[in-house]
Amino acid sequence: MKVHRSEDVLYVLKRTGRVLNPNQRIVVMLYAASEQRPDGSVWIKATELAETAGMSAPVFSRTRKELEALGWLEEVDSVGPVRVYRLTPTVEAEREQPGARLRVISG
Image (cartoon, rainbow, N blue to C red):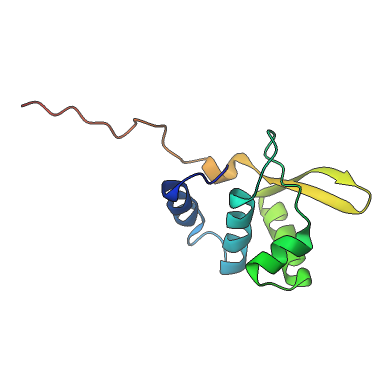
């Protein structure tokens, strides 16, 4: 999931509301809004993401582990001690397909 426009932001906020705690929602949004490779992986250091969110590195790391355990994030690669994550399809699990709300209006 990549956030491209305001509708995407609203979708992620609605999808994570009442399901995740505030820190978890922020981390999901960070991953959705960050630059991603074609496979969805985010190659930005956790310390940089934590700083962007205004979190300490330990809080960010703990929150990321919680999201991984809940199935929202998955580790896809590692380079030495650095782990690379991406959002799982869970984020878009209930998203309607484009055009699903189109209605025929007769005049």
